[in-house]
Image (tube, rainbow, N blue to C red; front, side, top):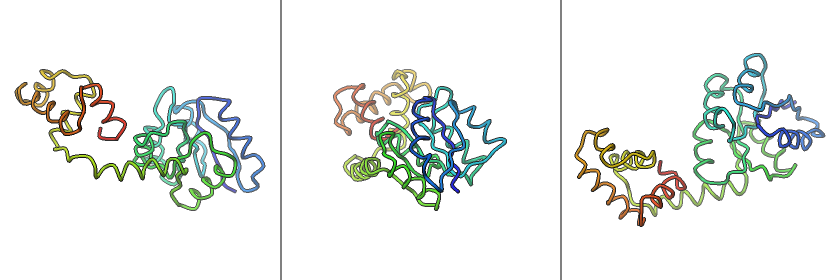
Length: 206
């Protein structure tokens, strides 16, 4: 019997998932937690084979919760469950230790297939998530290579720091940061900083 625990802050979504699985002969839904804290509290005294984990939680992102679960209970498989289909979410969830990623619009067959695959130790991605990652990996070759310093500057720009503030943090002159910002805009062919940040986030550059 595959023991599944659901972590989702929307009771209706959790109940919908449970109803999809209730007639599966070899899958048992143990219950659900509406917060990351409640999930960790449950696991402190119980166990599960698989956690269906929403990415958008009120107290902690599913990405961070996945890391915490895998650190403390490496034997529990995590299957990311979300409405988000951006490559950055899929990529970060898998990097955090998730064994798969499925979208919330999945039907009963797809959900069951994902659970069985992950239970056997395989990685499982919904068709849409798999396409997203494939497009992302193919797109990487199209991006110009950023230097380590350019990546640092890009990350700080995305956090909202000004050029003088970035210069102070990195112990370089403001002129150097001005140059890096111009190079980033030119390399990635972006017209302004807002477009640069949006592009970097959507394509997993930061």
